[in-house]
Length: 209
View 1 (cartoon, rainbow, N blue to C red):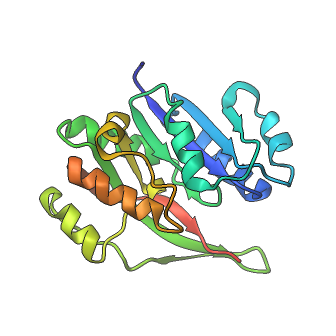
View 2 (view 1 turned 60 degrees about the vertical axis):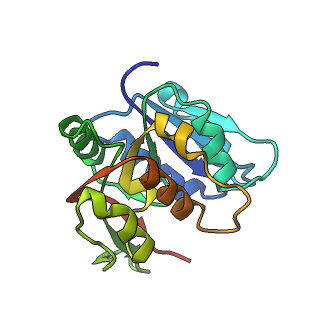
């Protein structure tokens, strides 16, 4: 296993938004070592669109729709690099997101994951972009992260990278949960490792129908 970051991008039926997300990943000032896109049997033009990217990404096409958690777990088993960044298929990444997060882990090698802020945005009917703060950010010490997360703090997966080896201790995403699989996964990560945070914005969370 070589050095670098594996990007996991699960998707379902969001061809246009996915392309914007993918372009924001490819535009990173620090390039990921690999990008794994898992298509959950989309009925739209997702597979055809992704084919235009050639060897810039690795596509896993599922034969039946089994949910986002299953897609992420499948990609986790395929990762070839020690750090993982799970990206949602409708958000946009800050150009320096990966550089910022990897720098945090380099300066804090004892940490198992690094995380940062996000802001929400929407596009109105005129094509104008509006942004606003989520209001859910909590600045806390590393040893307080787990408790804060269980109270009212939530770091979204696109806003963090983590060491792939932690999954062997915490377990993969729980595919039996109907929702909040990411929150459950975050709590279990925080139980086996410490994190390091930054006030920098890591990604922009799209709000849409």
